[in-house]
Image 1 (cartoon, rainbow, N blue to C red):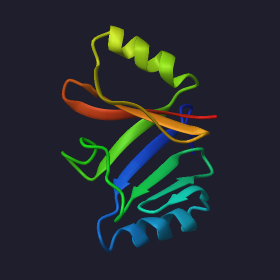
Image 2: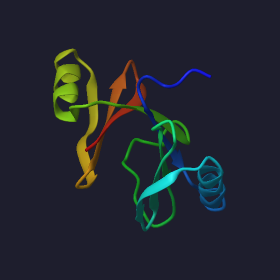
Image 3: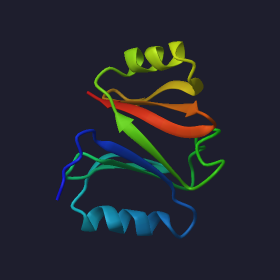
Image 4: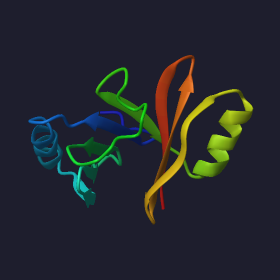
Length: 122
């Protein structure tokens, strides 16, 4: 099995009734919970993929689930520099850089109308 070279972040809309299903999957995969806030659970899987489950009680970023219930993101070493480079290349920002806790930050961007994310774990 090929390992990810760049860890992914998968953000899912845990609609009523599905948040528990996503959390059950995370547990089956042996994921470690790294953030547990009302309406947002974040897990780190063994291959360093991050699973964000947005549930009831949290206002999701405006654009994240407009066109679907899942968004893929990519881990970078320097989020600010990466976003700056993409903005200079003409990529459209969505919400800027959001820091959910001291060691975790992310940003959503658009390329050709397609939403993706970048994240950094310190």
